[in-house]
Length: 625
Image 1 (cartoon, helix red, strand yellow):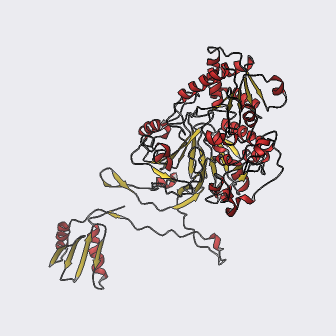
Image 2 (image 1 turned 90 degrees about the vertical axis):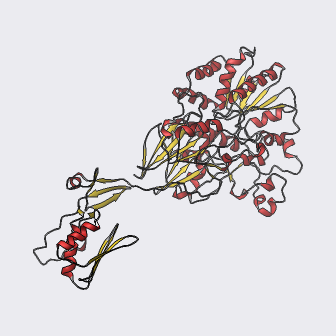
């Protein structure tokens, strides 16, 4: 089941061996671009825009249901960007299962949710509007709202109470830790190399293996490289979360970021970097550390403004083992030398310390809420200033739309370290899954670059694609089930060789199934009849175990069989060939013996003694076991 149309913010549900597993619950927030920004201070310019009215002080977030989410048993989280819809699922759908994620994923995911809630809730909501969601009214609205799909499913942002409740349902796991789900399947997180604590997942039974690859990177930004070896021998590999900008090189984008930043600051302008409070911001700070001294910019202050800025920097030290040591040391040195200062908001200490020109890292990348709205209003009128977009989640042109006309320079340097199509093709050749399943977007070139046939997944057999709100049957069948056999029952088996190297034994047993584990137990011994006349209760009855007829194997050579019949006094024997075998006619006895590959029939008229005699002659050519 595919519940998301955004391949880098996936939400899929896998039904496998009687378990229902949700793979990620990404939150597509591009619908926020349909709304006006939420400024901390009421903006006359935004309020008085023609044709619009700031009636609703809340951002709406997208969530669509395809199946009854209360039936989901577990949710597997691959990285902190792919868990932002978790409170909607755990708190509003009747979900009673367990969520699995690594500790850094949970803690940084909490920061992202906390920042989002803080940004939304600190803006007072004077009025609320919902009638516009009516389809008859929606079609009268200006674009892009009139073209928005399924606006009735958009939800208000969750609360911090809902966030805490959702996160309390998460069970922390470590890489390569094997987790049993109801005895039916085993799930294992693997390092994906993309972000702190990011994971790919193996979902396997005794005989089938499904790999889920989401948000992976082969770059050495973090000390835990991508675990590729464990993905081998997969029946199905579900592939999602590739780079959103396959034509852009992350290293080249970082270089462009630094040079544009330096150019602006040297000319006396300020630089605004809309960003999340974790992730790419640390890669940018590491590069700036190495760059600002050589560029003569060591006196330019770097400000990191977020309600969770302090917590984010603390986590970078708590999870030190997940970082490349040099990166952590550089960030700590920036803080200790006062080159990097962090604040919860633009109020308070920041107002006193603020000096220009400077570089400000703040959220939200959509430019619709957070402190970034204030700086866009403050710096947008000057061509000396620059806003540099590094997060690829939002269209920067749409993000800027409410602020036009804009004098400040806008630079687009999207940095996405996830796998590109060349890396994916190489990965698939190495791990060789039997089948690849991926979003439809990865099987055709991007709409804006239809000639780039290299920007698709290239594998054999061709990948099976899926789209939002589609139900797909995975291209493999379960053929075997593992059954354990009790030692005392195994001791009683007497195998017989029916072909060189192949032995068979019959077994009469009771199959006991519990928690998806199957065990063959010895059959109950028959109990002696009761001595008294007291009638037993029905529940005391033990099921009768009838004697099992021996199984037969082998083939009957017709010529030798005819000779044997003649030796035992049968005459006037005629053999006829049929499509499936032979028919032996005993004309004198008015009897027919039909010999086929998998059956033998003796047909005679009400002469049981003759039938038994012929049966015994047939059995001489067959093995019993």
